[in-house]
Image 1: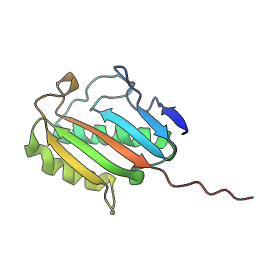
Image 2: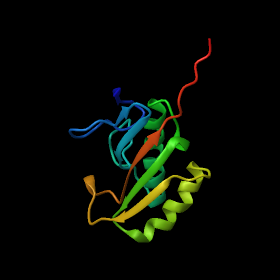
Image 3: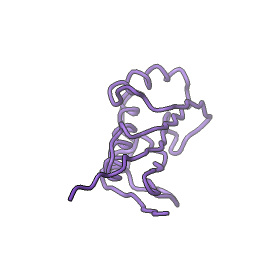
Length: 133
């Protein structure tokens, strides 16, 4: 097993005892992202759409640091404190993902870190690298 810790300044730094992502062979496990601005480490101001976009931008930064992109995500988990925001997640997700879409779960929760309304984590599978001589 080949294990690597993924870290990038383009996504919020971990605020606890976890890594932004862990790569094991061709699979990358992305930790939950909330709408934190990576430069200020503050919650972005704005409505739920602004916050959802920030979460997707943070996930995108981590996927790129791991050598992939959002199209390599095979499983996405969405946690919302208000499930009435789920249609907004769908609309914005269509801006970041193309078919075939990843498998996904949406879970209503009573609270999230820093009292944010949304958090997402993901699993990404990177394609095998082809080597030419």
